[in-house]
Image 1 (cartoon, rainbow, N blue to C red):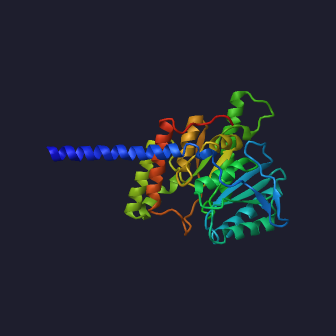
Image 2: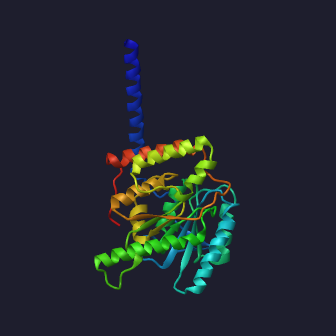
Length: 330
């Protein structure tokens, strides 16, 4: 009996200690969304002059911004970026009102990613392609947050550097945003000055339609981990989104202002935090199936799972006990 009491006491102490660690870390990160380590500066490599850096609270001056986080993507970035630029140029040639920019956020790469990125700036000009250097590795979430906060588009699309999602699928997300924003505008009785970018709307690209095939081809332990992660996501952010982790998501400027001024998670689980924040702000989220193919060289591995679970626990504790306060000032 005494031995059993010792075990129970040890277990309770361990749980309390674990919760204390989570609480302390959540408290430490309470101002993560306000902490910008490196000032965002755009440099024109042709003239070596600095270009004025916009902010998402400023009025939009482009129709769409594409934000690409890149960490050691020297080999995968060129092909994906070239395909993206060809698509954007072709669309702009058919529609003079279609203006765009690509913002590459180098997340502390130690290979030739920076060199590759600036080669595209030289080729397409700093008005079309811009590079933000974070200096050191912060994580995908922070790279995207920084890019979103310093973009000029009415619409803002995040996409991965590997080109896993077909770039033409941005039109699916764009059409969905337009439909939702128009419906919201009609219901609110807005006049002809209504702009799509003024309505907070988010659309997630989704690979959920590929899940059945993936389950049949993946190793059993990967399926087990995936199902476990989905369960944790459900507990942390609630139901509604089947694929939170697809790296192809579009936001109106109004939505980006609210969301990326509040995001605190810096690595893989920032997507789940976006879902949580969308629900808090009552921003409508849609899921649209996209064409996706697995590209070798993924940065996600088995060691990423514990980090994801840790971030989800931090998020749950941070928001639910009020340590992470949500700002609605933008």
